[in-house]
Image (tube, rainbow, N blue to C red; front, side, top):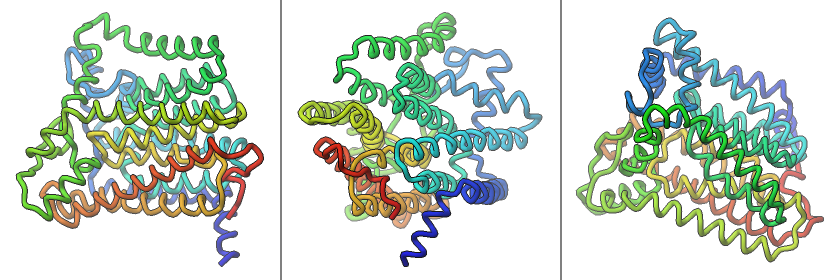
Length: 427
């Protein structure tokens, strides 16, 4: 058994093996996607890019649900394509180019800060296998890779570049904005006011530079993408929906599913009452977690390097909290979680923690795949019991993974500097 484990670790650490496996898996995913015809949101992106190229201004002349920079990754393949089918494949190529860039930086993080290459290989294969066609069919991989590169710069103390990259990512997809405060925490803790000011100014400058054309064109609609998401209902795959749907399997209720704001959302007395409060709950939950971590870290005696590592891990923890309280939890969120997972290997821990983290991560990936495959095949929209249970299990392992990451955060504030990191062992 030990020999098998050692060989698996060796293979996952081999770039050539991971590259070969990645190509094989990607080709299989492309074949499946083409045969199923399930290109997800790419058809929508094709229309969005076409509207912009025809002269329409996003937000004022057309409904557009994402921040402005996301258009860049739609327009590039649209300009180069000659029909919808070619657009699909050009988007796929663009996606895999970004995955290759992300893989490069995953290995750099593993080599420089974790000391164990197989974790990088593990993340890449999980992304391609469990993320499957969602990696192609959504635009999340682009900002996720930007954040990953930003965190590499951050761990190297190149703060300005790190914050610029996270800001660019946030102007592509909004989620990375939640990383700015935890990234600032160790800088403020060390009272590096000039560094903090530069970081904040960099973020503001990127935001203004990207938004300025739309503010000039029509100030009233320049930030329409913010209200678009705040007004939506609770999507059927979200953690909150899982509880409502599970309850409805046991006790008959008035819960139904309606399509709106680009997703299938739960309707009924409970979901309708909770939906307006979800954004507030998300902010409160993130704020409480950050306050607890700030107080705990301030009382601990930790080195500057450990504080940076803890901050990177805190970014992952904040992401998990954000998703837990989010109105939406489609499989695209898995891309974010798995790409950020190496942050959990930066901190001090033991072999048991590593094995537990690995097991939960695998089960979470498996049930993420089962959940989105059963969405249409079993009929989640019709509240099929098996499809509902698949979502519930995915959400359960998400919560378990979040708790494990919380535990690592808490343990890191109490560990001594001479304890080994979770990535130091190869078992």
